[in-house]
Image 1 (cartoon, rainbow, N blue to C red):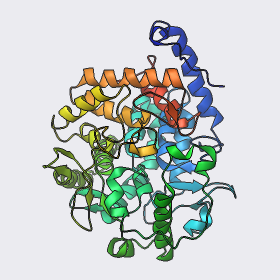
Image 2 (spheres, rainbow, N blue to C red):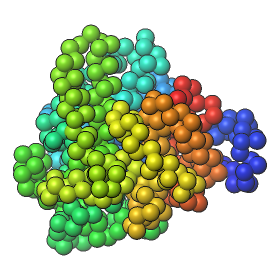
Image 3 (cartoon, one colour):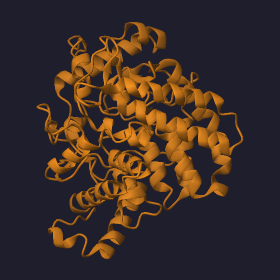
Image 4 (cartoon, rainbow, N blue to C red):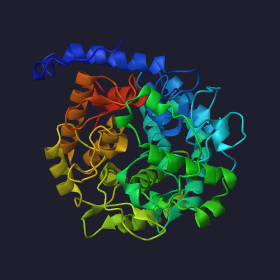
Length: 435
């Protein structure tokens, strides 16, 4: 059972050593408890399969106490890579008939079955961090994984890159399912014909913390569209009603390309192709800048319009190595507005909803990436403030999927893998190699 610490400010950090030891062990116990033998589920019950970016955060977390297991996690994920290079966002390793939408909804016959879309490509970055912790142990693993990473990045450039920005063809592909970024584009998706279904998420988590029924209908309509065209990328590019360039994806991918180039150089590979991608993505980052609102923003590829949403994805600019200090005023304002930043949507936005998934909550794993970028850009004090506040929230409320940024109240699934992972790698006072 996860023990938390709710007895007020005096408990953290005055009892830091004792609490750190206990919380570190809880985090390790959560990760091993969610281990299904070669892959890790995000949390038992709510998410019973292997999710792409969750799995890579799990690998990062395992690397703090079992590096061999970390490499297995990454290798299991890439074993289900499609022939075109895409790494799917869900891998259905076993049958869980009550889960929805399961493999039959996606219509992709593989063994094991997979979904038909991808997810934020954090793999190259996290693999680099795992590898650099022990180059000798990781050398053979990196050599085997490098061509698979390269193929996935080529898929992104071929099928998801437009004007130097990374386009998502389903909100789930972004990892930020119900973000306000998608509102205008999703209004053009007709969800009226998806039929009856039973959601699994709201049977495990309060519906006020999840996407609405209307949003879910439209998510399923996009799944049906992809399934009916057999996930043909050219058909999706030409005919899908939803194609949005996401700064979160663009920045994660740009950072991943930088790290892939570093890994390639380590292996003695020719990285000139990757250098071309990086140049295109750096130029494309400027297309995400909304001059009227003064922040990085999503762009509806169909209409060319900005979303008008200042979401947490915009604060990955430092992680990507772009933007200078242009986003600092917005970040400083938001960090003053909430106790536990970074909220997934600007609290000043009328659509802000503190407990509802990506409409307001703070996500620890996003904070870890934002803070890494801040520190690398020379904003170490802000990065450390963000780490401390994230650590306090987890210590007081438990290892949950996400948190109310105003109160710290836990939300979503409990005993959550990626929250345990970022505790071990970054948030914990005992985390090694923290920046």
